[in-house]
Image 1 (cartoon, rainbow, N blue to C red):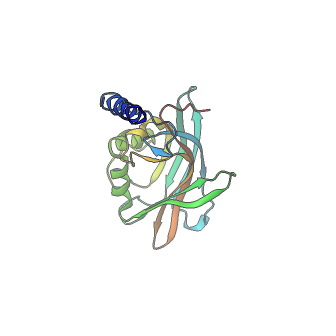
Image 2: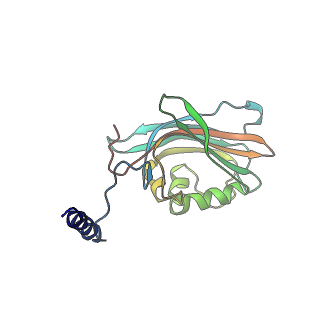
Image 3: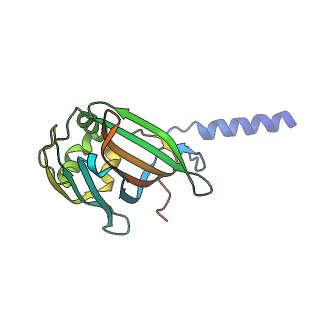
Length: 197
Protein backbone atom coordinates (compact mmCIF):
# COMPACT_ATOMS: atom_id res chain seq x y z
CA UNK A 1 0.00 0.00 0.00
CA UNK A 2 2.86 2.34 0.88
CA UNK A 3 4.59 1.73 -2.49
CA UNK A 4 1.35 2.37 -4.36
CA UNK A 5 0.95 5.73 -2.61
CA UNK A 6 4.55 6.75 -3.39
CA UNK A 7 4.15 5.71 -7.05
CA UNK A 8 0.91 7.67 -7.28
CA UNK A 9 2.55 10.81 -5.86
CA UNK A 10 5.50 10.51 -8.29
CA UNK A 11 3.13 9.96 -11.24
CA UNK A 12 0.93 12.96 -10.36
CA UNK A 13 4.01 15.17 -9.91
CA UNK A 14 5.48 14.08 -13.25
CA UNK A 15 2.20 14.62 -15.11
CA UNK A 16 1.69 18.00 -13.45
CA UNK A 17 5.21 19.17 -14.41
CA UNK A 18 5.05 17.79 -17.97
CA UNK A 19 2.98 20.74 -19.22
CA UNK A 20 5.73 22.82 -20.86
CA UNK A 21 3.40 25.69 -21.75
CA UNK A 22 2.94 26.57 -18.09
CA UNK A 23 6.04 28.24 -16.58
CA UNK A 24 7.39 26.69 -13.42
CA UNK A 25 6.74 29.10 -10.56
CA UNK A 26 9.74 29.21 -8.22
CA UNK A 27 9.37 32.45 -6.26
CA UNK A 28 12.16 31.98 -3.71
CA UNK A 29 15.15 31.17 -5.91
CA UNK A 30 18.08 33.57 -5.30
CA UNK A 31 18.90 33.96 -9.00
CA UNK A 32 16.90 34.27 -12.18
CA UNK A 33 15.43 36.66 -14.71
CA UNK A 34 15.03 40.11 -13.27
CA UNK A 35 13.90 43.67 -13.64
CA UNK A 36 15.81 46.77 -12.57
CA UNK A 37 14.59 49.24 -9.97
CA UNK A 38 16.81 52.35 -9.89
CA UNK A 39 17.26 53.85 -6.41
CA UNK A 40 19.87 56.56 -6.93
CA UNK A 41 22.66 58.10 -9.01
CA UNK A 42 25.67 59.94 -7.62
CA UNK A 43 29.10 61.14 -8.64
CA UNK A 44 32.21 59.27 -7.60
CA UNK A 45 34.69 60.86 -5.27
CA UNK A 46 37.60 61.37 -7.62
CA UNK A 47 40.67 63.46 -8.29
CA UNK A 48 39.33 66.63 -9.94
CA UNK A 49 42.57 67.18 -11.91
CA UNK A 50 42.15 63.96 -13.91
CA UNK A 51 38.40 64.30 -14.40
CA UNK A 52 37.99 64.49 -18.17
CA UNK A 53 34.39 63.19 -18.15
CA UNK A 54 32.25 65.00 -15.59
CA UNK A 55 28.97 63.22 -14.81
CA UNK A 56 26.25 65.10 -12.95
CA UNK A 57 23.25 62.78 -13.09
CA UNK A 58 20.26 62.36 -10.79
CA UNK A 59 17.05 60.31 -10.75
CA UNK A 60 13.67 61.84 -11.44
CA UNK A 61 10.35 60.09 -10.80
CA UNK A 62 8.11 60.60 -13.82
CA UNK A 63 5.24 58.59 -12.32
CA UNK A 64 4.73 55.85 -9.72
CA UNK A 65 6.29 53.25 -12.04
CA UNK A 66 8.55 55.39 -14.29
CA UNK A 67 11.98 56.72 -13.42
CA UNK A 68 14.28 58.83 -15.58
CA UNK A 69 17.95 59.76 -15.35
CA UNK A 70 18.47 63.50 -15.81
CA UNK A 71 21.44 65.81 -15.54
CA UNK A 72 24.46 66.35 -17.75
CA UNK A 73 27.87 65.13 -18.79
CA UNK A 74 30.79 67.27 -19.88
CA UNK A 75 33.42 65.67 -22.13
CA UNK A 76 36.65 67.66 -21.96
CA UNK A 77 38.21 65.16 -24.38
CA UNK A 78 36.59 62.80 -26.93
CA UNK A 79 35.20 59.52 -25.55
CA UNK A 80 36.77 56.91 -27.80
CA UNK A 81 38.31 53.44 -27.89
CA UNK A 82 41.60 54.55 -26.32
CA UNK A 83 39.99 54.25 -22.86
CA UNK A 84 39.01 51.28 -20.73
CA UNK A 85 35.47 50.75 -19.49
CA UNK A 86 35.11 49.39 -15.96
CA UNK A 87 32.04 48.08 -14.13
CA UNK A 88 32.30 47.22 -10.46
CA UNK A 89 29.25 46.09 -8.50
CA UNK A 90 29.06 45.87 -4.72
CA UNK A 91 26.14 43.98 -3.16
CA UNK A 92 24.31 45.06 -0.01
CA UNK A 93 24.55 42.36 2.62
CA UNK A 94 21.95 41.29 5.16
CA UNK A 95 23.07 43.84 7.79
CA UNK A 96 23.18 46.83 5.42
CA UNK A 97 26.90 46.96 4.59
CA UNK A 98 28.39 46.77 1.10
CA UNK A 99 30.44 43.79 -0.06
CA UNK A 100 32.69 45.15 -2.81
CA UNK A 101 33.58 43.40 -6.04
CA UNK A 102 30.50 41.17 -6.37
CA UNK A 103 30.83 41.56 -10.15
CA UNK A 104 33.80 43.12 -11.94
CA UNK A 105 34.22 43.80 -15.63
CA UNK A 106 37.02 45.71 -17.35
CA UNK A 107 37.22 46.07 -21.12
CA UNK A 108 39.45 47.96 -23.52
CA UNK A 109 37.88 50.01 -26.32
CA UNK A 110 35.47 51.84 -24.01
CA UNK A 111 33.19 53.42 -26.62
CA UNK A 112 32.73 50.24 -28.69
CA UNK A 113 32.26 48.15 -25.54
CA UNK A 114 29.58 50.49 -24.20
CA UNK A 115 27.81 50.38 -27.56
CA UNK A 116 27.92 46.56 -27.49
CA UNK A 117 26.59 46.39 -23.89
CA UNK A 118 23.72 48.80 -24.58
CA UNK A 119 22.74 46.99 -27.81
CA UNK A 120 19.28 48.12 -28.96
CA UNK A 121 19.24 50.75 -26.19
CA UNK A 122 22.38 52.51 -27.54
CA UNK A 123 20.66 55.03 -29.86
CA UNK A 124 17.76 55.99 -27.53
CA UNK A 125 20.10 56.28 -24.51
CA UNK A 126 22.59 58.42 -26.42
CA UNK A 127 19.87 60.69 -27.85
CA UNK A 128 18.19 61.01 -24.43
CA UNK A 129 21.61 61.96 -23.05
CA UNK A 130 21.71 64.89 -25.50
CA UNK A 131 24.32 63.22 -27.72
CA UNK A 132 23.18 63.41 -31.33
CA UNK A 133 26.37 61.84 -32.73
CA UNK A 134 25.50 58.23 -31.92
CA UNK A 135 28.71 56.77 -33.32
CA UNK A 136 32.12 56.42 -31.73
CA UNK A 137 33.95 58.58 -30.77
CA UNK A 138 31.69 60.92 -28.82
CA UNK A 139 33.12 64.43 -29.36
CA UNK A 140 34.07 67.05 -26.80
CA UNK A 141 31.01 68.91 -25.48
CA UNK A 142 28.38 69.54 -22.85
CA UNK A 143 25.47 67.09 -23.10
CA UNK A 144 22.24 67.57 -21.17
CA UNK A 145 20.15 64.49 -20.42
CA UNK A 146 16.52 65.58 -20.59
CA UNK A 147 15.28 62.20 -19.43
CA UNK A 148 16.78 58.75 -20.02
CA UNK A 149 13.97 56.26 -19.40
CA UNK A 150 15.41 53.58 -17.10
CA UNK A 151 13.20 50.95 -18.79
CA UNK A 152 15.52 51.22 -21.82
CA UNK A 153 18.18 49.29 -19.90
CA UNK A 154 15.91 46.23 -19.97
CA UNK A 155 16.65 45.91 -23.72
CA UNK A 156 20.42 46.16 -23.27
CA UNK A 157 22.84 43.25 -23.69
CA UNK A 158 23.33 42.73 -19.97
CA UNK A 159 23.23 39.19 -18.50
CA UNK A 160 19.70 37.82 -18.57
CA UNK A 161 19.91 36.26 -15.10
CA UNK A 162 21.52 37.66 -11.94
CA UNK A 163 21.40 37.15 -8.19
CA UNK A 164 18.62 39.23 -6.64
CA UNK A 165 19.54 42.02 -4.26
CA UNK A 166 20.56 45.65 -3.96
CA UNK A 167 23.72 46.67 -5.82
CA UNK A 168 25.98 49.69 -6.00
CA UNK A 169 27.15 49.83 -9.62
CA UNK A 170 30.30 51.90 -10.30
CA UNK A 171 30.76 52.86 -13.94
CA UNK A 172 34.19 54.34 -14.73
CA UNK A 173 36.29 55.40 -17.71
CA UNK A 174 40.00 54.87 -17.24
CA UNK A 175 43.34 54.71 -18.99
CA UNK A 176 46.54 53.21 -17.55
CA UNK A 177 44.93 52.81 -14.09
CA UNK A 178 43.91 56.48 -13.94
CA UNK A 179 40.18 57.17 -13.66
CA UNK A 180 39.05 59.98 -15.99
CA UNK A 181 35.38 59.96 -14.97
CA UNK A 182 32.86 57.84 -13.13
CA UNK A 183 29.43 57.71 -11.55
CA UNK A 184 27.59 55.33 -9.25
CA UNK A 185 24.13 53.82 -9.68
CA UNK A 186 22.31 52.17 -6.79
CA UNK A 187 19.76 49.69 -8.06
CA UNK A 188 17.78 46.65 -7.10
CA UNK A 189 17.78 43.43 -9.08
CA UNK A 190 14.23 42.25 -8.44
CA UNK A 191 12.08 39.31 -9.40
CA UNK A 192 9.76 40.34 -12.26
CA UNK A 193 6.63 39.99 -10.10
CA UNK A 194 7.96 41.91 -7.08
CA UNK A 195 6.71 45.43 -6.42
CA UNK A 196 8.94 48.50 -6.11
CA UNK A 197 8.22 48.88 -2.38
